[in-house]
Structure formats: C-alpha cells, structure tokens
Length: 363
Image (cartoon, rainbow, N blue to C red; front, top):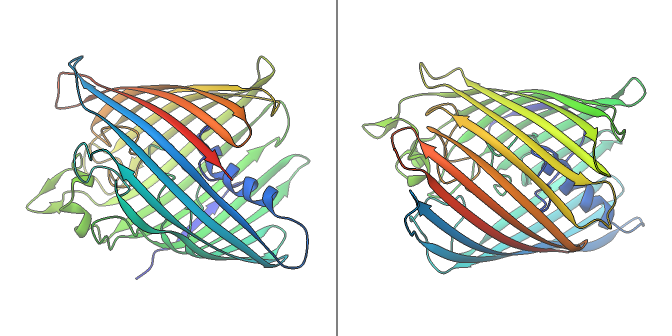
C-alpha cells in the first residue's frame, strides 16, 4: 500500500549545500532545476552533484573517530513538453569507514537508484509528481532528511493571495523506500502560506500532518535506535503534527530568516514533543561569497521517527543540541561548508561533538 500526502505552501527545493534555510532548501532545488531548462517544445538536460565530506566525531572531548565520504548523483531530465517531464538519477558513494554500521540514512558504499519520476503540470500552479523523487512537503531537518527519496505520488496546487502572498496545498502517497528492505508507508497533509514573496520583509506559516505506518523492518535496524522499542516493536505510533513559522528581514546586504518548528506526535503517550529554532543568513547578491546560520533543537524520544530525520545530527531523538555552520561559494556551482554540532542525549552525561566539512559541485 502506498501512503498519501496533502500540503499547502508556496515554493519548492532540493538541498543546496550553501544556505540550508530549513524548508527553503526544498524550494531551491526545484527552482534551480527550472533555471537549467532551455526553451523549446522538447529537450534534455543533465543534473546532478558531486559531494566530498570529512567527518570528525568526539565524545566528551576525547579523541574520536573520523572518516571521509564521497558521493556522485548524475541524472537527466527530459522535458517532453511544457507541461510534462521525466527524470532519473543514480547515486554512487564510497567511504573510508561506516562509523556505526547502519546509522547513516544512505549506504556508505554502493550504487543505487536516486530518482525516477514523471512530473506533470496540468496548470501553471498545479504539479503532479509520480515515482521516486524528493518529498514534496516542506519540512525541516528535524523531521525529514532531504537526501531521502520516497516512492509514490504527490499533488500540489498553489494560488496567489492578495498582492504578494500565496498558498500551496500538497497531497501525496509515499512508500519510505529506506534502507534495510524498508516497507514503511507515509501519509501526510500540509498547508503553507507564504507572506510577501520576494519582498525584503516576509515570512511563512505552515501546518502539516504525517502518518507513518509499517515500520517493522526499520525497527530491527540501527536507524531507530533512539526511539522506544520493546520486544522488537516500536512502543509508539507516529502521527505527527508539524507547525512552522518563519520571518524574513533585510540585514547587512542580505536576508536573515528566523524559523521555529514545533512537532507533536499524537501517537505517543509520552516523550512526544520536539522544537527547533534556527537563524539563516544569505546574501542578496549571487556574487557574494559567504552564508551562515545556527540552530538549536530539542527532540523527545518518540516525537519524530528517528529513521527519517537528518543524519547530519548524531542522535535522532531523545537529544538536545546546537548546530552552527558557515558556507563559502567561490562560484555559483561550487560550495564549501563547515558545520559544527554539539549534542547531549537524554541518557548520557557527556556531549557528542561533530565537525563536518563538505564540498559540493552542482551541474
């Protein structure tokens, strides 16, 4: 059975290395894809990225482990007409070691299908996506890892409100298609209101509901190691209400976005709340080189599904911690990013500190 998703908002994105402005990341990927498309009734164009990562982990200040990773995701898009396109991509990766086997959301070594989708635009404001592609909901890393590609169908519709605002609605049915022969199903709804798009001052309000089912295969994997499990079963259902509010203001020849994300798991009888605060700054000009941001999040043990949120964080729930990052773009298709994490799990006294150095080339 495939899951279903409904969503409302204005915009779309994959995960750029530079400013990962929370749900803004999802909007930017689609916009970057559209900018690559040449004009004409039918055409092909290549997409993809190359990522190189250095990863260092320390527990309580003691020397820890380190590893290197590299991945490449070449893909192709065929725009059969102005309203229909088909896309496919593969992902190949290699690593010096798997620090704790199975804890990454993607295989450390190997080749697998990354995307295979059909996208139809029945109107200028509506989109139907079928196949294996990015999650069409706008979610922060506290809830969803943007590198994951579920399989299913999603429908989105956007309409203008007043002069500069818009509302976006999305509906979708997904299979998680995660590691370890995952058979999970995801049903969700989201509504988002974008306020004063493109203006110096603006913001966003969004509400979503996500229902996760058939998580048994993931329960026996290390991916859910921070959720409550007993006798091989998760002790909570996962029915998430996701609330987001963001404000954007001009600052130092750029834009500063403040965002709060609060999640309540209606399927848990305790440890069911999570909250994330973040600040992200991006320059207003493409010629500017630096970007940066910071975030703090507190996730109770069964507030989110530990298998699906960002694996840049070492602990996926039952944790509190902070992240700061700085991005540098020598040119538009190349980005370097330094990220630091400091986390403390609820059942541990020592802090885990992680440093990530990423280089990404996009084409």
